Amino acid sequence: MNQLPLMRSLTDRDHQVIWHPYTQHKNKLPPIPVVKGRDALLWDDKGNTYIDAISSWWVSIHGHGNPYIAQKIYEQALRLEHVIFTGFTHEPAVLLAERLLPLLPGTFSRVFYSDNGSTAVEVAIKMAIQYWKNVQKTGLEDDGRTGRKKILALHNSYHGDTFGSMSISERSVFTAAFQEYLFEPLFIEAPSSENIDRLRDLLRDQGQEIACFIYEPLLQGAGGMCMYEAAALDQLLEAAKEQGILCIADEVMTGFGRTGKLFAGDYLRQRADIICLSKGLTGGTMAMGVTAATEKVFDAFLSDDRRKTLFHGHSFTANPLACTAALASLDLLQEEGCDRRLRRINEQHSAFAGKLRQYPIVRHVRVLGTVIAFEISVGEDGYINPAGLDLTQRALEKGIYLRPLGNTVYIMPPYCITEKEMDQVYTFLVQYIEGKTASR
Ligand SMILES: *Cc1c(COP(=O)(O)O)cnc(C)c1O
Image 1 (cartoon, rainbow, N blue to C red):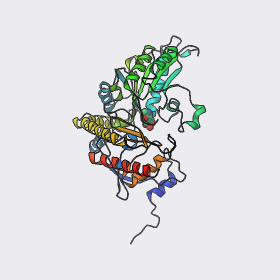
Image 2 (tube, rainbow, N blue to C red):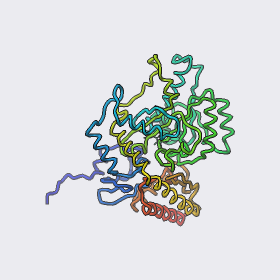
Image 3 (spheres, protein in one colour):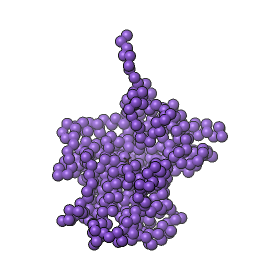
Image 4 (cartoon, rainbow, N blue to C red):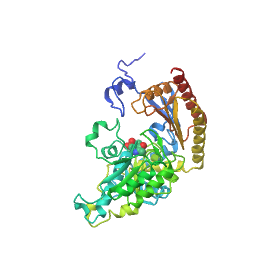
Protein backbone atom coordinates (compact mmCIF):
# COMPACT_ATOMS: atom_id res chain seq x y z
CA MET A 1 0.00 0.00 0.00
CA ASN A 2 1.20 3.41 -0.96
CA GLN A 3 0.16 5.64 1.91
CA LEU A 4 1.03 9.30 1.98
CA PRO A 5 2.43 10.10 5.41
CA LEU A 6 1.16 13.68 5.49
CA MET A 7 -2.40 13.33 4.24
CA ARG A 8 -4.17 15.81 6.46
CA SER A 9 -7.92 16.08 6.42
CA LEU A 10 -9.59 19.12 4.93
CA THR A 11 -10.85 20.12 8.38
CA ASP A 12 -7.28 20.07 9.74
CA ARG A 13 -6.06 22.21 6.85
CA ASP A 14 -9.04 24.56 7.29
CA HIS A 15 -8.16 24.80 10.98
CA GLN A 16 -4.71 26.15 10.05
CA VAL A 17 -5.62 28.81 7.49
CA ILE A 18 -9.30 29.85 7.52
CA TRP A 19 -11.13 32.53 9.49
CA HIS A 20 -14.84 31.74 9.16
CA PRO A 21 -17.69 34.29 9.25
CA TYR A 22 -19.77 34.61 12.42
CA THR A 23 -17.61 31.94 14.05
CA GLN A 24 -15.91 31.91 17.44
CA HIS A 25 -12.86 29.82 16.63
CA LYS A 26 -12.07 28.89 20.20
CA ASN A 27 -13.53 25.45 21.01
CA LYS A 28 -15.48 25.43 17.78
CA LEU A 29 -16.65 22.19 16.24
CA PRO A 30 -14.78 21.27 13.05
CA PRO A 31 -16.55 22.50 9.90
CA ILE A 32 -18.12 19.89 7.66
CA PRO A 33 -16.34 19.46 4.31
CA VAL A 34 -19.03 19.67 1.64
CA VAL A 35 -18.12 17.99 -1.61
CA LYS A 36 -21.34 18.17 -3.60
CA GLY A 37 -24.77 19.77 -3.70
CA ARG A 38 -27.87 18.83 -5.66
CA ASP A 39 -31.29 20.39 -5.18
CA ALA A 40 -32.03 20.60 -1.44
CA LEU A 41 -29.22 18.19 -0.52
CA LEU A 42 -25.58 18.65 0.46
CA TRP A 43 -23.05 15.78 0.59
CA ASP A 44 -20.09 15.68 2.94
CA ASP A 45 -16.78 13.90 2.28
CA LYS A 46 -17.98 10.76 4.03
CA GLY A 47 -21.07 10.44 1.86
CA ASN A 48 -23.55 11.74 4.45
CA THR A 49 -26.32 13.96 3.13
CA TYR A 50 -27.88 17.02 4.73
CA ILE A 51 -31.14 18.73 3.81
CA ASP A 52 -30.25 22.41 3.43
CA ALA A 53 -33.31 23.76 5.24
CA ILE A 54 -32.08 27.38 5.25
CA SER A 55 -31.00 27.62 1.60
CA SER A 56 -27.36 28.18 2.59
CA TRP A 57 -27.94 31.47 4.40
CA TRP A 58 -31.11 32.19 2.41
CA VAL A 59 -29.58 32.38 -1.06
CA SER A 60 -30.06 29.01 -2.83
CA ILE A 61 -33.67 29.50 -3.90
CA HIS A 62 -33.46 26.84 -6.63
CA GLY A 63 -31.32 24.49 -4.57
CA HIS A 64 -27.77 23.41 -5.30
CA GLY A 65 -26.04 22.33 -8.49
CA ASN A 66 -28.75 23.54 -10.83
CA PRO A 67 -27.60 22.34 -14.26
CA TYR A 68 -29.48 25.05 -16.19
CA ILE A 69 -27.83 27.92 -14.31
CA ALA A 70 -24.46 26.13 -14.42
CA GLN A 71 -24.66 25.72 -18.20
CA LYS A 72 -25.50 29.41 -18.71
CA ILE A 73 -22.59 30.51 -16.52
CA TYR A 74 -20.25 28.17 -18.41
CA GLU A 75 -21.31 29.51 -21.81
CA GLN A 76 -20.95 33.10 -20.64
CA ALA A 77 -17.52 32.39 -19.13
CA LEU A 78 -16.28 31.26 -22.52
CA ARG A 79 -17.61 34.46 -24.14
CA LEU A 80 -16.83 37.22 -21.64
CA GLU A 81 -16.04 36.64 -17.99
CA HIS A 82 -15.68 40.26 -16.95
CA VAL A 83 -15.19 43.80 -18.17
CA ILE A 84 -14.94 47.16 -16.41
CA PHE A 85 -18.44 48.69 -16.21
CA THR A 86 -17.65 52.35 -16.57
CA GLY A 87 -17.28 53.35 -20.19
CA PHE A 88 -18.27 49.82 -21.26
CA THR A 89 -21.45 47.79 -21.19
CA HIS A 90 -22.51 44.28 -22.11
CA GLU A 91 -25.59 42.27 -23.04
CA PRO A 92 -26.14 40.35 -19.75
CA ALA A 93 -26.14 43.57 -17.68
CA VAL A 94 -28.59 45.39 -19.95
CA LEU A 95 -30.81 42.37 -20.46
CA LEU A 96 -31.00 41.70 -16.72
CA ALA A 97 -32.00 45.31 -16.02
CA GLU A 98 -34.59 45.17 -18.82
CA ARG A 99 -36.10 41.99 -17.43
CA LEU A 100 -35.87 42.92 -13.76
CA LEU A 101 -37.31 46.44 -13.82
CA PRO A 102 -40.85 45.53 -14.96
CA LEU A 103 -41.00 42.75 -12.34
CA LEU A 104 -40.13 44.99 -9.39
CA PRO A 105 -42.87 46.30 -7.07
CA GLY A 106 -42.83 49.94 -8.14
CA THR A 107 -41.94 52.21 -11.04
CA PHE A 108 -38.20 51.71 -10.99
CA SER A 109 -36.28 52.66 -14.10
CA ARG A 110 -32.56 52.34 -13.25
CA VAL A 111 -30.44 49.44 -12.04
CA PHE A 112 -27.17 49.97 -10.20
CA TYR A 113 -25.11 46.80 -9.77
CA SER A 114 -22.86 45.89 -6.86
CA ASP A 115 -21.59 42.79 -5.10
CA ASN A 116 -23.82 41.70 -2.23
CA GLY A 117 -26.68 42.72 0.04
CA SER A 118 -24.60 45.06 2.19
CA THR A 119 -23.27 46.95 -0.82
CA ALA A 120 -26.76 47.14 -2.34
CA VAL A 121 -27.83 48.86 0.90
CA GLU A 122 -24.76 51.14 1.00
CA VAL A 123 -25.54 52.28 -2.52
CA ALA A 124 -29.20 52.92 -1.63
CA ILE A 125 -28.26 55.04 1.38
CA LYS A 126 -25.67 56.99 -0.59
CA MET A 127 -28.20 57.61 -3.36
CA ALA A 128 -30.74 58.90 -0.83
CA ILE A 129 -28.32 61.16 1.05
CA GLN A 130 -26.81 62.61 -2.10
CA TYR A 131 -30.23 62.98 -3.69
CA TRP A 132 -31.06 65.66 -1.11
CA LYS A 133 -27.66 67.36 -1.50
CA ASN A 134 -28.15 67.40 -5.26
CA VAL A 135 -31.67 68.84 -5.25
CA GLN A 136 -31.19 71.38 -2.46
CA LYS A 137 -30.68 74.93 -3.58
CA THR A 138 -27.69 75.16 -1.28
CA GLY A 139 -26.36 72.17 -3.18
CA LEU A 140 -23.13 70.52 -2.18
CA GLU A 141 -22.05 73.52 -0.12
CA ASP A 142 -24.85 72.78 2.30
CA ASP A 143 -24.07 74.85 5.41
CA GLY A 144 -25.11 72.09 7.80
CA ARG A 145 -28.14 73.97 9.13
CA THR A 146 -30.53 73.16 6.32
CA GLY A 147 -31.43 69.90 4.76
CA ARG A 148 -32.52 66.43 5.58
CA LYS A 149 -29.96 64.70 7.76
CA LYS A 150 -31.90 61.95 9.47
CA ILE A 151 -32.32 58.37 8.39
CA LEU A 152 -35.33 56.46 9.63
CA ALA A 153 -34.90 52.74 10.34
CA LEU A 154 -36.77 50.02 12.19
CA HIS A 155 -35.89 48.34 15.44
CA ASN A 156 -34.85 44.71 14.90
CA SER A 157 -33.65 45.57 11.41
CA TYR A 158 -30.65 43.97 9.76
CA HIS A 159 -29.22 45.58 6.64
CA GLY A 160 -25.71 44.16 6.45
CA ASP A 161 -22.23 44.09 7.95
CA THR A 162 -20.44 47.05 6.34
CA PHE A 163 -20.27 50.26 8.37
CA GLY A 164 -23.12 52.10 6.71
CA SER A 165 -25.41 49.09 6.72
CA MET A 166 -24.45 48.31 10.34
CA SER A 167 -25.28 51.88 11.30
CA ILE A 168 -28.87 51.54 10.13
CA SER A 169 -29.27 48.08 11.68
CA GLU A 170 -30.52 47.33 15.18
CA ARG A 171 -27.79 47.68 17.76
CA SER A 172 -26.91 44.18 18.87
CA VAL A 173 -24.09 41.83 19.66
CA PHE A 174 -23.20 42.13 15.94
CA THR A 175 -22.54 45.87 16.16
CA ALA A 176 -21.48 46.36 19.79
CA ALA A 177 -17.71 46.56 19.17
CA PHE A 178 -18.21 49.31 16.59
CA GLN A 179 -20.85 51.40 18.33
CA GLU A 180 -18.79 54.59 18.64
CA TYR A 181 -17.97 54.52 14.91
CA LEU A 182 -21.54 54.15 13.67
CA PHE A 183 -23.81 57.00 12.62
CA GLU A 184 -27.14 57.20 14.41
CA PRO A 185 -30.42 56.77 12.57
CA LEU A 186 -33.78 57.46 14.10
CA PHE A 187 -35.09 54.03 15.12
CA ILE A 188 -38.82 53.36 15.31
CA GLU A 189 -40.77 50.21 16.11
CA ALA A 190 -42.03 48.20 13.16
CA PRO A 191 -45.48 49.62 12.36
CA SER A 192 -48.59 47.93 13.73
CA SER A 193 -52.23 48.87 14.10
CA GLU A 194 -51.41 49.83 17.72
CA ASN A 195 -48.52 52.22 17.11
CA ILE A 196 -49.29 53.60 13.66
CA ASP A 197 -50.93 56.81 14.93
CA ARG A 198 -47.89 57.57 17.08
CA LEU A 199 -45.55 56.89 14.17
CA ARG A 200 -47.55 59.16 11.90
CA ASP A 201 -47.36 61.95 14.50
CA LEU A 202 -43.61 61.51 14.62
CA LEU A 203 -43.38 61.84 10.86
CA ARG A 204 -45.54 64.94 10.92
CA ASP A 205 -43.18 66.51 13.47
CA GLN A 206 -39.82 65.46 12.07
CA GLY A 207 -40.57 64.41 8.48
CA GLN A 208 -38.90 67.42 6.88
CA GLU A 209 -35.59 66.50 8.54
CA ILE A 210 -35.65 62.91 7.30
CA ALA A 211 -33.80 62.00 4.11
CA CYS A 212 -34.92 58.40 3.81
CA PHE A 213 -36.68 55.51 5.46
CA ILE A 214 -35.21 52.02 5.08
CA TYR A 215 -37.16 48.89 5.94
CA GLU A 216 -37.30 45.16 5.33
CA PRO A 217 -40.89 44.83 4.12
CA LEU A 218 -43.07 42.44 6.17
CA LEU A 219 -40.24 40.20 7.33
CA GLN A 220 -37.20 41.28 9.33
CA GLY A 221 -34.72 38.46 8.81
CA ALA A 222 -31.51 38.42 10.84
CA GLY A 223 -33.16 40.56 13.53
CA GLY A 224 -35.17 37.49 14.51
CA MET A 225 -37.56 36.61 11.67
CA CYS A 226 -40.07 39.21 12.91
CA MET A 227 -43.16 39.50 10.74
CA TYR A 228 -45.35 42.60 10.65
CA GLU A 229 -48.53 43.79 8.97
CA ALA A 230 -48.70 44.99 5.37
CA ALA A 231 -51.57 47.39 6.16
CA ALA A 232 -49.58 49.18 8.87
CA LEU A 233 -46.50 49.42 6.67
CA ASP A 234 -48.64 50.87 3.88
CA GLN A 235 -49.91 53.55 6.25
CA LEU A 236 -46.40 54.38 7.42
CA LEU A 237 -45.11 54.55 3.83
CA GLU A 238 -47.97 56.82 2.87
CA ALA A 239 -47.13 59.17 5.75
CA ALA A 240 -43.44 59.10 4.80
CA LYS A 241 -44.23 59.91 1.18
CA GLU A 242 -46.40 62.83 2.21
CA GLN A 243 -43.28 64.26 3.83
CA GLY A 244 -41.21 63.64 0.70
CA ILE A 245 -39.08 61.04 2.46
CA LEU A 246 -37.35 58.63 0.09
CA CYS A 247 -38.48 55.09 0.86
CA ILE A 248 -35.91 52.29 0.54
CA ALA A 249 -37.18 48.73 0.49
CA ASP A 250 -34.48 46.28 1.54
CA GLU A 251 -35.69 43.14 -0.22
CA VAL A 252 -32.30 41.44 -0.04
CA MET A 253 -33.88 38.52 1.78
CA THR A 254 -37.57 38.85 0.89
CA GLY A 255 -37.01 39.11 -2.87
CA PHE A 256 -37.52 36.46 -5.52
CA GLY A 257 -40.43 34.48 -4.15
CA ARG A 258 -39.33 34.07 -0.56
CA THR A 259 -42.53 35.55 0.90
CA GLY A 260 -44.84 33.72 -1.49
CA LYS A 261 -45.07 36.58 -4.00
CA LEU A 262 -42.21 37.60 -6.27
CA PHE A 263 -41.41 40.48 -3.88
CA ALA A 264 -42.72 41.40 -0.43
CA GLY A 265 -43.59 44.78 -1.97
CA ASP A 266 -46.24 42.96 -4.00
CA TYR A 267 -48.29 42.75 -0.78
CA LEU A 268 -48.23 46.56 -0.50
CA ARG A 269 -50.06 49.43 -2.16
CA GLN A 270 -47.32 51.98 -1.54
CA ARG A 271 -44.20 51.93 -3.71
CA ALA A 272 -40.60 52.43 -2.69
CA ASP A 273 -38.27 54.91 -4.41
CA ILE A 274 -35.28 52.59 -4.11
CA ILE A 275 -35.11 48.80 -3.74
CA CYS A 276 -32.19 46.58 -2.68
CA LEU A 277 -31.80 43.01 -3.92
CA SER A 278 -29.23 40.29 -3.54
CA LYS A 279 -29.48 36.85 -1.87
CA GLY A 280 -31.85 35.02 -4.26
CA LEU A 281 -30.92 37.22 -7.23
CA THR A 282 -28.54 34.75 -8.89
CA GLY A 283 -30.31 31.69 -7.52
CA GLY A 284 -27.57 31.53 -4.90
CA THR A 285 -24.79 30.88 -7.40
CA MET A 286 -22.81 34.13 -7.71
CA ALA A 287 -22.35 37.14 -5.44
CA MET A 288 -24.27 40.14 -6.74
CA GLY A 289 -26.32 43.06 -5.48
CA VAL A 290 -28.81 45.32 -7.23
CA THR A 291 -30.02 48.75 -6.17
CA ALA A 292 -32.87 49.93 -8.40
CA ALA A 293 -34.11 53.52 -8.34
CA THR A 294 -36.96 55.51 -9.81
CA GLU A 295 -36.35 58.09 -12.52
CA LYS A 296 -36.94 60.83 -9.93
CA VAL A 297 -33.92 59.67 -7.93
CA PHE A 298 -31.79 59.15 -11.04
CA ASP A 299 -32.69 62.60 -12.40
CA ALA A 300 -31.26 64.32 -9.33
CA PHE A 301 -27.82 63.07 -10.35
CA LEU A 302 -28.04 64.39 -13.94
CA SER A 303 -26.08 67.61 -14.08
CA ASP A 304 -23.39 69.59 -15.85
CA ASP A 305 -21.88 69.83 -12.40
CA ARG A 306 -19.72 66.72 -12.17
CA ARG A 307 -19.84 66.84 -8.38
CA LYS A 308 -23.42 65.60 -8.60
CA THR A 309 -22.21 62.22 -9.90
CA LEU A 310 -22.85 59.11 -7.80
CA PHE A 311 -19.21 58.32 -7.00
CA HIS A 312 -19.61 54.67 -6.20
CA GLY A 313 -18.48 51.49 -7.91
CA HIS A 314 -16.84 48.14 -7.26
CA SER A 315 -14.24 46.24 -9.28
CA PHE A 316 -16.75 43.53 -10.10
CA THR A 317 -19.76 45.76 -10.79
CA ALA A 318 -22.16 44.05 -13.19
CA ASN A 319 -20.00 40.96 -13.53
CA PRO A 320 -21.29 39.22 -16.68
CA LEU A 321 -21.23 35.77 -15.08
CA ALA A 322 -23.35 37.00 -12.16
CA CYS A 323 -25.77 38.81 -14.52
CA THR A 324 -26.08 35.62 -16.58
CA ALA A 325 -26.73 33.56 -13.46
CA ALA A 326 -29.43 36.04 -12.43
CA LEU A 327 -31.07 35.82 -15.85
CA ALA A 328 -31.07 32.02 -15.65
CA SER A 329 -32.49 32.18 -12.12
CA LEU A 330 -35.30 34.43 -13.36
CA ASP A 331 -36.08 31.88 -16.10
CA LEU A 332 -36.54 29.24 -13.41
CA LEU A 333 -38.59 31.55 -11.17
CA GLN A 334 -40.95 32.35 -14.01
CA GLU A 335 -41.56 28.72 -14.87
CA GLU A 336 -45.09 27.72 -14.06
CA GLY A 337 -44.02 25.00 -11.62
CA CYS A 338 -42.25 27.47 -9.38
CA ASP A 339 -45.44 29.17 -8.18
CA ARG A 340 -46.89 25.78 -7.39
CA ARG A 341 -43.84 24.87 -5.32
CA LEU A 342 -44.07 28.12 -3.34
CA ARG A 343 -47.73 27.43 -2.59
CA ARG A 344 -47.08 23.85 -1.59
CA ILE A 345 -44.30 24.84 0.83
CA ASN A 346 -46.59 27.49 2.33
CA GLU A 347 -49.40 24.98 2.80
CA GLN A 348 -47.06 22.50 4.45
CA HIS A 349 -45.71 25.24 6.76
CA SER A 350 -49.23 26.31 7.71
CA ALA A 351 -50.25 22.78 8.62
CA PHE A 352 -47.06 22.34 10.64
CA ALA A 353 -47.69 25.68 12.40
CA GLY A 354 -50.97 24.29 13.75
CA LYS A 355 -49.13 21.33 15.16
CA LEU A 356 -46.37 23.46 16.71
CA ARG A 357 -48.87 25.65 18.54
CA GLN A 358 -49.80 22.68 20.73
CA TYR A 359 -46.43 22.74 22.49
CA PRO A 360 -46.21 25.04 25.52
CA ILE A 361 -42.48 25.70 25.00
CA VAL A 362 -43.12 26.93 21.44
CA ARG A 363 -44.07 30.62 21.08
CA HIS A 364 -45.02 33.04 18.28
CA VAL A 365 -45.42 30.53 15.49
CA ARG A 366 -45.55 32.57 12.30
CA VAL A 367 -45.60 31.83 8.57
CA LEU A 368 -45.03 34.02 5.54
CA GLY A 369 -44.66 32.40 2.14
CA THR A 370 -41.85 29.85 2.33
CA VAL A 371 -40.69 30.95 5.80
CA ILE A 372 -41.86 29.53 9.12
CA ALA A 373 -40.41 30.80 12.41
CA PHE A 374 -40.99 30.39 16.14
CA GLU A 375 -39.24 30.77 19.47
CA ILE A 376 -38.51 27.92 21.84
CA SER A 377 -38.66 28.91 25.49
CA VAL A 378 -35.28 27.85 26.76
CA GLY A 379 -33.26 30.57 28.45
CA GLU A 380 -33.36 34.21 27.37
CA ASP A 381 -34.49 35.38 23.93
CA GLY A 382 -31.75 36.60 21.65
CA TYR A 383 -28.91 35.64 19.36
CA ILE A 384 -26.54 34.67 22.18
CA ASN A 385 -28.95 32.04 23.51
CA PRO A 386 -27.09 28.72 23.06
CA ALA A 387 -30.26 26.81 22.18
CA GLY A 388 -29.57 27.34 18.49
CA LEU A 389 -26.15 25.72 18.58
CA ASP A 390 -27.60 22.67 20.30
CA LEU A 391 -30.41 22.37 17.79
CA THR A 392 -28.01 22.71 14.85
CA GLN A 393 -25.89 19.87 16.22
CA ARG A 394 -28.84 17.55 16.84
CA ALA A 395 -30.21 18.32 13.36
CA LEU A 396 -26.91 17.52 11.64
CA GLU A 397 -26.95 14.11 13.29
CA LYS A 398 -30.28 13.54 11.56
CA GLY A 399 -29.05 14.76 8.18
CA ILE A 400 -30.68 18.19 8.36
CA TYR A 401 -29.11 21.61 8.34
CA LEU A 402 -30.85 24.29 10.41
CA ARG A 403 -29.24 27.37 11.95
CA PRO A 404 -31.53 29.14 14.44
CA LEU A 405 -30.95 32.77 15.40
CA GLY A 406 -30.45 32.19 19.13
CA ASN A 407 -33.69 30.56 20.25
CA THR A 408 -35.57 31.67 17.14
CA VAL A 409 -35.96 28.61 14.95
CA TYR A 410 -36.89 29.02 11.30
CA ILE A 411 -37.09 27.04 8.09
CA MET A 412 -36.32 28.81 4.80
CA PRO A 413 -35.96 26.00 2.26
CA PRO A 414 -34.93 26.02 -1.39
CA TYR A 415 -38.08 26.02 -3.52
CA CYS A 416 -37.17 22.62 -5.01
CA ILE A 417 -37.32 20.88 -1.62
CA THR A 418 -39.56 17.80 -1.83
CA GLU A 419 -42.63 17.20 0.30
CA LYS A 420 -40.83 14.26 1.88
CA GLU A 421 -37.76 16.32 2.74
CA MET A 422 -39.96 18.97 4.34
CA ASP A 423 -41.62 16.25 6.42
CA GLN A 424 -38.22 15.02 7.57
CA VAL A 425 -37.40 18.53 8.81
CA TYR A 426 -40.75 18.83 10.60
CA THR A 427 -40.38 15.39 12.18
CA PHE A 428 -36.96 16.28 13.50
CA LEU A 429 -38.26 19.53 15.00
CA VAL A 430 -41.19 17.78 16.70
CA GLN A 431 -38.84 15.20 18.21
CA TYR A 432 -36.46 17.93 19.34
CA ILE A 433 -39.25 19.97 20.93
CA GLU A 434 -40.74 16.90 22.63
CA GLY A 435 -37.29 16.05 24.00
CA LYS A 436 -36.93 19.56 25.43
CA THR A 437 -40.46 19.46 26.85
CA ALA A 438 -39.75 16.17 28.62
CA SER A 439 -36.44 17.38 30.09
CA ARG A 440 -37.93 20.51 31.64
C1 LIG B 1 -28.42 39.37 4.34
C2 LIG B 1 -29.03 40.69 4.29
C3 LIG B 1 -28.28 41.84 3.95
C4 LIG B 1 -26.80 41.77 3.71
O1 LIG B 1 -26.49 40.99 2.60
P1 LIG B 1 -25.03 40.37 2.44
O2 LIG B 1 -25.02 39.82 1.08
O3 LIG B 1 -24.90 39.33 3.51
O4 LIG B 1 -24.06 41.48 2.62
C5 LIG B 1 -28.94 43.05 3.86
N1 LIG B 1 -30.25 43.14 4.10
C6 LIG B 1 -31.01 42.08 4.43
C7 LIG B 1 -32.47 42.24 4.63
C8 LIG B 1 -30.42 40.82 4.55
O5 LIG B 1 -31.16 39.76 4.90
